[in-house]
Image (cartoon, rainbow, N blue to C red; front, side, top):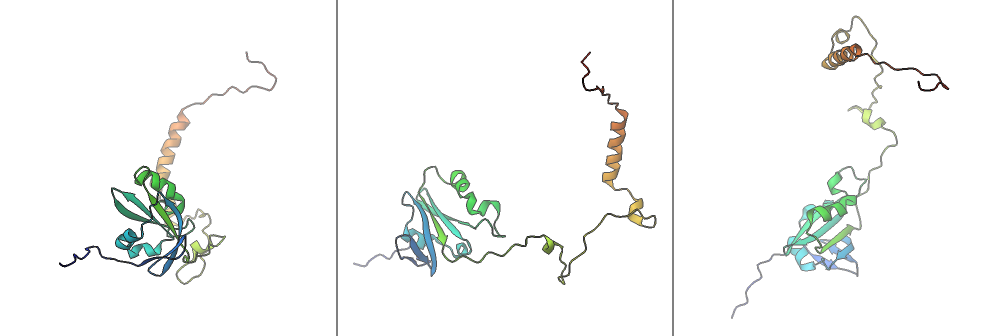
Length: 182
């Protein structure tokens, strides 16, 4: 009698090193949370995709006996959007996961370094050759300047609105301090 081969293919190697430390294809992760025993080594080996390697956190949640993954970044990363920041984890679990489902959260032990952010915004004003552009000051009204003679659609709209408000009279009664209402 021949043994039937298992049709599931193992995509990655998952090794449990210590109580809360594992490796997935030689990258170390710490199990931050294992809610309702959601961590399953064999299912991770079957379902894991290497696209998840770029994330700082990996969340695996169970729905209809299927394991699905979602990657999250540290909040400070420039590639982090609102939906894939780790601070959005609770919202993700509430909005996209089955109520009360089992899940686990893995945190990468050696994350990519965060890029230092400048305290000033001077890097936003740099040109391609890395020279700093001067900040634009107010444009002086120069009669020779072509654009100063042209009105744009916003200034036309403003002048039309100002005419409407100018025709409406606003009356205020000015009362001196100490004067009683009469």
